[in-house]
Length: 242
Image 1 (cartoon, one colour):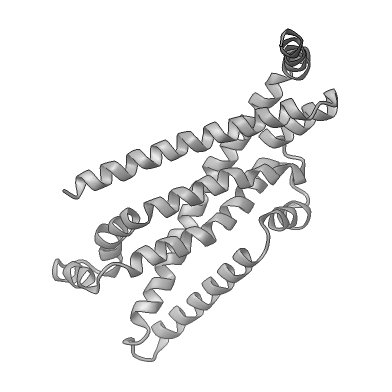
Image 2 (cartoon, rainbow, N blue to C red):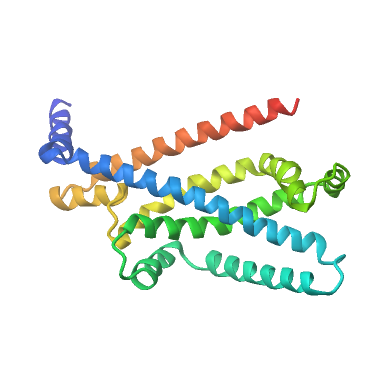
């Protein structure tokens, strides 16, 4: 037992203490959190816009008279569907590499490229989540908004979207958890995120177990913290409905 403890201690010192290698994990964690935070914001913005477009088309196309507005809405909805099909039908790592090696081949801002890639990818899934929440709201809520003097945009903003967010919060929380784990492929574009930091340590010490366990533990803690905040948010929303 004593020998085992000494071996673990030596491995820990080799992987994290020598040459201050623990700083690599800290710096990688910061990059991961930064990419995730801004990708979440971008994903929500894109998701809300696409969800409103698609739900507006689904709810109104059958009653809209033929004309310019219906044609424009149909074209925008078609483009939104193309976006959803392409993004959800291709791996996020391929999208990331296309962003880095093709679209922004001359850029050196790897964090910005990662934020765009993961944000655009997340936006497709957020869009469908929010759209399902909007479609679940009874049409009577739209009529209530109109009776209060709201136009369509105001009805969406003040009545429909708040209710839709309440309905889909668990699914949105799950998407954000998936997103923070998806950022682990950032190393494909040489971004020194948390996973890449663990890989760098492994390459320098030729010891795989300790760095990988450390990375896995940090991701687990992040997911547990996010899950806790989501649970608190759900509980407060339930209490506000009483």
